[in-house]
Image 1 (tube, rainbow, N blue to C red):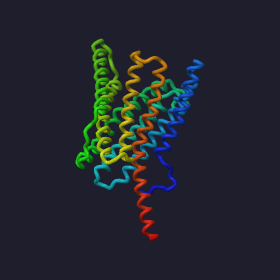
Image 2 (image 1 turned 135 degrees about the vertical axis):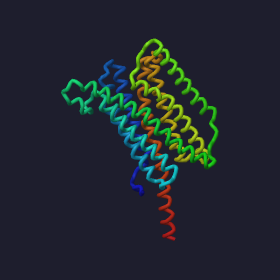
Image 3 (image 1 turned 120 degrees about the vertical axis):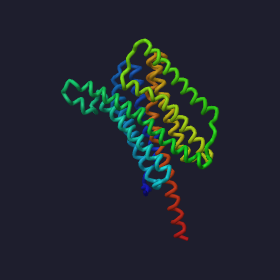
Image 4 (image 1 turned 30 degrees about the horizontal axis):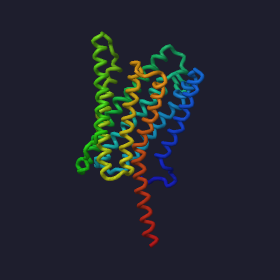
Length: 305
């Protein structure tokens, strides 16, 4: 598949759009802190923020599809990117459900229906979106990264984790155990959980698996140099780590460990995570693009000679 020569650097474009979105969001937060009115901050998350998350997930899906098409049939990496592409599709679906259909905003077509079940339907869409864009996405991504790990392990590039890598995974595991213990205490106290909540419990264990896989892949690729492929898997590791950080922020807020100001800052972690998920396949596509352009230049020089 040919890449348009006029196509700008996709990673730089993603970073630029993310920076602008965060600037607008922080401006809305400043207006909220100064005036005490939450109109601006609510408008940001319901419209520019929601559109950014959906656009980032759509870009992630398109770029993952592009990456998948670059590998030949039968290649293990083609299978890996197919699963990553499916994970991107569930990410986009979950974003549409949770950011549009599950929110009271003008973007939600359900809000134009004058029927009594609209609020219940919106809440169901939100819950489904959180599960599709959460545990289901994580499961598919974990399977895709497992194929990538097999490729590098067979190539003899499997590298040992550093102390910082182990520390990050250990901290996430400790948080998961702490949250699991809290759930056990709630069950003993007689609290009843919904099926949505029970399925959502799998998110944190899946994040541990994903973080381990992404870090291992990145360490293996770094053995070959700090190029675009290393940046690709580094972006996936960052996305997973930021998702875990966002989950920890929500848990800390619900338990009263974070004050209102610190909790509001944590809301913006999800924009960084969405951008990082899109940057992963973006760097892969950029690597293919440079290889293709380099090959065209060699052919042109040979013809001129």
